[in-house]
Image (cartoon, rainbow, N blue to C red):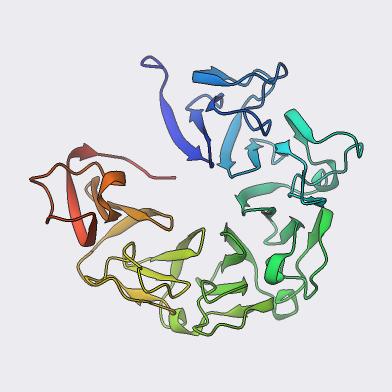
Length: 327
């Protein structure tokens, strides 16, 4: 792919996607769950183009599925349709005997809407439209779908709350069983299980609630994966938090301690984008420099570039690396 200009990447549990500047999508990795998007169902050790996808603008990947949004606002999903006899969040119903959707299939239930963003949780999906609406589908573990019920949804359903307040969402993020959404005013709403939704208490919420710890800043971007979350403000500030595990090495606060509500990473200024998971975090600075913290083996740090040990708990510059954006 040395002659192909890549603009974003996404990684699932055992596979990766890459989006080119001309809207082509490439995939590689394990395909036992049908996540690579090829009709023959084969795995691929190297990048292989998904022929049926054109003019794509956004991609996403998770354990059981993959997704893409094209320039017309159409959402396509593919992968494993059912996990533990419940839908995984493909957005359409398949024949009960069919477990895998091998090639990208349009979510027809959203054909009247223009999707501008998609986030894939463990077994559910969130889609945000240009009208500011958020749709959900898949398994509702611990209220992750935000509709106030524990039932799963095979087809897209709109999140009504806090629609009555007139809030318009512009971005969404999905973790293991918690979700985040940002409004056009920069307010963050969270819902789902644990405390990774940002509320600071063990009891999750089945309906979206305002994350009070971020009410004093204007948030532009949110990220969630596994049981960890982070947010980037318009001033370039980074806030991180997680489910409260005593071994939270990936938050960048200088100590491996629980952080149940959003807390600013004081050492970092002018953050542009971030990527977080339960083991490590990568952060892009305004000048293209990349900072990392968490499990050393995932950060690309040599022995001389960081303090000794298996984990790096404070933001550390990753040498010889400059980027334009992070997905």
